[in-house]
Each structure stands twice: as C-alpha cells, then as structure tokens.
Image (cartoon, rainbow, N blue to C red; front, side, top):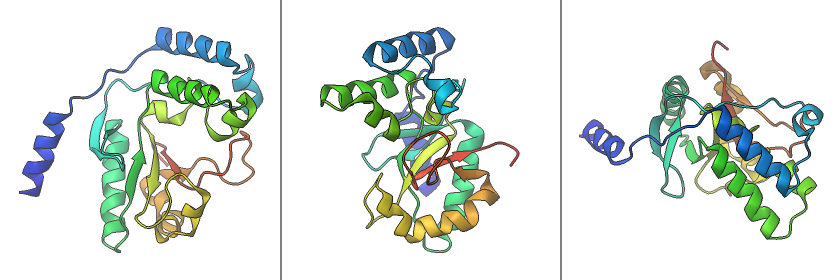
Length: 195
C-alpha cells in the first residue's frame, strides 16, 4: 500500500523543467545587476553549476512542496534515509533541487528586505553557483530542531550524518571556516558520485 501511495504522489508532481547555459548566463547577469560581484566565482572559489537533465521526486519537503534530486542522488538519499530510520533518525527534506530562477528569487527577496549583498552571499550562494542547482544537494532537518539554523548541529540527525553520510556519498558542503566564505551550514549536504 505504501508503494502505491508513493507511485500516486510521483504522478501528482510531474518533474519540473530544467534549463541550460543560456538561462544560467541570463540569471547570473540579473544577479550582477542586483549587486553580485562579477568576480564572485573566482574570489569565492566556486564554479558555475549545471541543472540536471532529469530529476526524481524524493517526497514533500517540510513546507509541503515537491522535492527533487537527480536520479542517482535520489537513490543514494533513499538508502541513507532508510538507514537513518532504522536507528530512529528521521531525516527531513527542508530543501532540495532549486532552479537558477529560484535562487535568483531568494537573492532578490533579500535585497528587497534591505539586506546588503555581502551579508546575503555569506548565507546563500549566488545564482548559477548553488549546489542546489545540480540536484545533488539538499538541506536536511529533524523534528524538534529549527530548520536552516546552526542549532541543527546539536540534533541526533546531524550526529548520525557526521558518522554515516559519507557511506552514501554525501558530504557537508559548508563546515565552519570554509574556503568559500559561506556561513557554517550543518544542514547542507551534497552527494558526490563515486565517493
């Protein structure tokens, strides 16, 4: 019965369209117009990311939005999630794949709230550079702990991920004092093929 419900939910959410180089370039130009420095990638040691050709539904996120990962990352996350559940750890999807446009919207909203670009880029990768574009990254949460906050590193889920995520190919992208100048994000994990 559970498999049947999963199949129905997959059909209820057709995969979103992904975009190529032209869209990425346009969005990056729009981000520069908002104040993202032209040399952002070089100075932050980040490379432009690609959106995947295919996405796989991985369930609803904590805001009841369909969440997507590229197929191999989705399979690895499903295995990791089952392993965690076998130890009573529920790994919640807070955010997964994000389009170039979605990331631009995040930056635009923060600018409209009056935040300065330097502060924004400490908390969010610039459009075109986010690992979320690749369909390999996701933000993970746990019931009883605030989402997208440093306090997640006090959760049993974070402790479990530190011990076991590597077995499934997932790595913490932004540890403390990372070379990219992005604030410590204990919730942000990215799947790397072949690791």
